[in-house]
Image 1 (cartoon, rainbow, N blue to C red):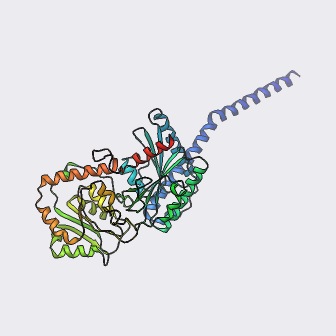
Image 2 (image 1 turned 90 degrees about the horizontal axis):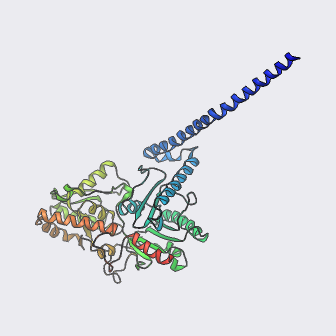
Image 3 (image 1 turned 180 degrees about the horizontal axis):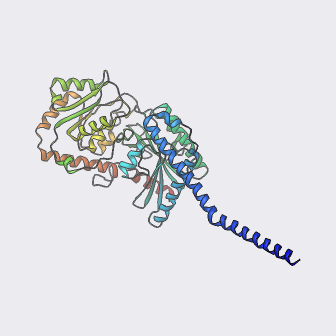
Length: 451
């Protein structure tokens, strides 16, 4: 009997020890297994964007490959943005009293953020699905999101004030722009959003009637519209003109001025690298360059067909042409305003602008005497405006007489003007001239409405 009790006690003690060991195993080693599994999932998530980036560089078909981690990636991107915004909110608490979120759904959004706000984006990879940035101007905190993963309904809206940047140049773009506006309308109707401004890359013929119904003055909800090109709607009350800027969609960079850019002699009097369309003023320009022998003094390289994207080599050649020329010839295209004007300014090369109105519904010269390019002219743009390319030989003859010191001062003035155009922080601003800076317009108008 004693032996049986002894065996029973030994059995119970052994069972207790086994249970304790089993519990200890789960406590101390079970978490490691979970962590390892999570790490594995994290590696998979990290690998997916890398494949996507490689696919986008090599071929557009790569983006159609099925990605089993796509949902997790979008969730993680949205979680990261919300977390970073919360961190910024905490760090700026008491320092800012106004918040604006910018949704960049057109390439001109990068001009606004990187060139005007001088903001940074994370990640720096231009092919990333989701990119974000934060900037504080005065007591206003601006956050910026852009990329293919920024789609309606798939990210949190944590602010009351939004700037929506859209492309309305053609029908396909207008369709997507309309979807974004309908999404914003729903947010306003459900009181998740209070104020909306739109920056619109308009149609080059100024045919933008599709957005009229969304303007607040017409019963809509868009309080402010900043529109590119000389639209007849511009009244500097709720519709303002916005500069076209540089071709960020072709990866034109933010250019930092250097000592050599300002002070060195430039080997070329002028430059023109671009497409020559049949029966256009560009053909006339080419004829004048050849007849007068000016092409020997200027860097000229033309092509017959427009190309939407640049190669690394062609972009480098274009930038060097701007850097090494005193003047940049800017003939009209579909519209008078072109990226070349702003890109020349970035390198201190004076734009020689063909000052003629193109076909379409843009500003009526009988009403707007400064049209075309009324915004740039109102800002006293230090350009050379000509009505006909026959005036070019006389312009170049005068250019030959200008000494280097005068050119240096002229370059400084051009870069100073460009800085004022973007930031609104220099003496060029006055109460009597239209304030181009979106910060000033939007902040001032919204504050009046909120208070």
